[in-house]
Length: 313
Image (cartoon, rainbow, N blue to C red):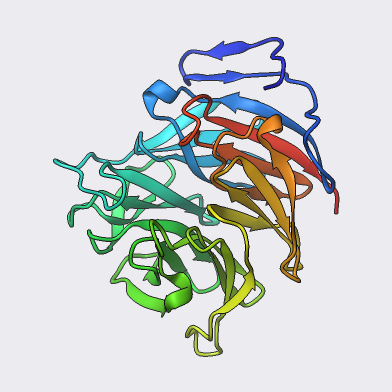
């Protein structure tokens, strides 16, 4: 871990900010990695997924706290919503309620996936600015909805189910979910299959955590799923990811305390590691030349945090 100078406690937000120096573990094209926020493990504030708005504010899901939060560029943290607790959680693989993926619409509405193992709560939820969370679509209670992406053009949401190994499509305005893509490449082999999810260059991209793969599924002219393509392999425990620009190069979080750069030819390189402060990183977002990586500390049980780094294009 880096030496921490000038720790400032934010009692109301429950986080610590640090002016830690530049990390030595980062590898080009990623540099100047530093931890910018620490979240209290005892409060369950373990960041699972991330999106960043045009002003540089970070939106996070705190998986086991059932919360959606915003972190401003200055480090102020505000919990936007807490999802209702189930009477008795029976979430597959986890046993407790889990808030997973997050996406944000142009009007500021935030969408998240929520898994409880109960039919009354499991599904996709939305929070409008200043509003209360409400469910827009139910999903199977015996599944584990996880990754989430919004097609701004069509107003449709795509959702991975890590237990059933499928991708659902859901109207963002509300309605019934339908299986959009399925196949062996999305299925789990031991614990969790389809996980991270992004829309990019006319396709839906996903990861398979158990199989360590990056998948590309073309969207046909009629909006259906084309054949699943395996674009990269050999990355066990791969979670969510983000593209570095208009091309197909991406950065992916691996649960073994790594962030890897995955090139279009499938080769990959570790660019961030535990030496940079990663503690079970769960997702990545890229905003211009800035990389954001939340760590949930699921495996380390030490320091849930948010890392920020520079990306050279």
